[in-house]
Figure 1 (cartoon, rainbow, N blue to C red):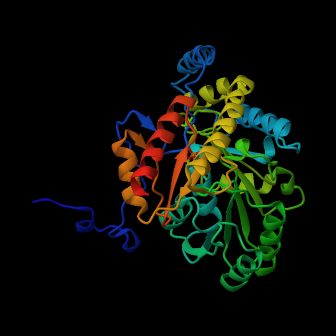
Figure 2: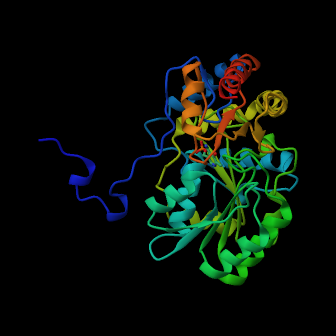
Amino acid sequence: MSIAIDDLPVREELRGKSPYGAPQLDVPVRLNTNENPYPLPEPLVERIAERVREAARGLNRYPDRDAVELRTKLAEYLTRTGGHPVGVENVWAANGSNEVIQQLLQTFGGPGRTAIGFEPSYSMHSLIARGTGTGWISGPRRDDFGIDIEAAVRAIAEHRPDVVFVTTPNNPTGNTVPRETVLALYEAAQAAKPSMVVVDEAYVEFSHGDSLLPLIEGRPHLVISRTMSKAFGAAGLRLGYLAAHPAVVDAVQLVRLPYHLSAVTQATALAALEHTDTLLGYVEQLKAERDRLVAELRAIGYEVTESDANFVQFGRFPDAHEAWRKILERGVLVRDNGVPGWLRVTAGTPEENDAFLDAVRELKKEQS
Ligand code: PMP
């Protein structure tokens, strides 16, 4: 007898749902998950091996539960690049920013509470809300994918959510949310509840503008979420972190599993942080490639959303999924995020981007 998920006594809200997952297909050019295309440089690989070897000698013991050394180094990185001094007491780390977001929702959301995001945006915000029993409210965005301050403030006043998500630069659209908008949403969220505002800056290193990190000063309900998966080129490491008022760091510790960050993860992340400058060197290259993708897609005749990230949203297609399939037939995997008429491509190496541009050039000819 075959038994499927729905034959099990799973929670009601999980019935009939599918797990999150971009297809991991074996094709020559994979530009679908906003990864950094450059492998870690060899000296860093060596340093990681060294630090992991050291950590291995102590694996009979649990790791540093509070990851103090790692959080100190992350605080130094933020202080150096984010335009605002932060200390270890402002920083918390977890297995990817997805886990950071999960811990935030376990702490500030949960059954009987709600969270709002302005969609289309990063779909894991709503999925993690579901997983933590937090009600989800889909907030509005304009047709050009910007956030309309008035409409957003109205939605916050009406629904009085416990958590407000703002992703900037936004995924999958690529555009930045202006500082004034975030400030207006923060004020609205405080007037309505008060609630926590989580600014997801997963892609901020690729932005033309600055991090919103300085806004945490005097705003204890504001959280900045970051990751080493994108700019640091370490998606496989699974290391995300947040910066906020020290009370927020204390609060998430109420829900974190003890020893959630393995000694191997901490050692690897510390090694990567020793090579920050080399890793961020690729960011400049990727930004240039991102700008080239925007310019060439427009020259071919596509519409493109202004991008501040390491990916570009392009369209419009009468049938985006059909276009996705045709690009895949040409050996290039991009992402169909379910935004009607639009697809998303991650900036890869110059060669990968050329292969992508050839594919969409042919597609344009075929469709016109
Ligand atoms: N936030 C945003 C906006 C993202 O696009 C992603 C990755 N796709 C994440 C968070 C999660 O990244 P990670 O868990 O790898 O840190």
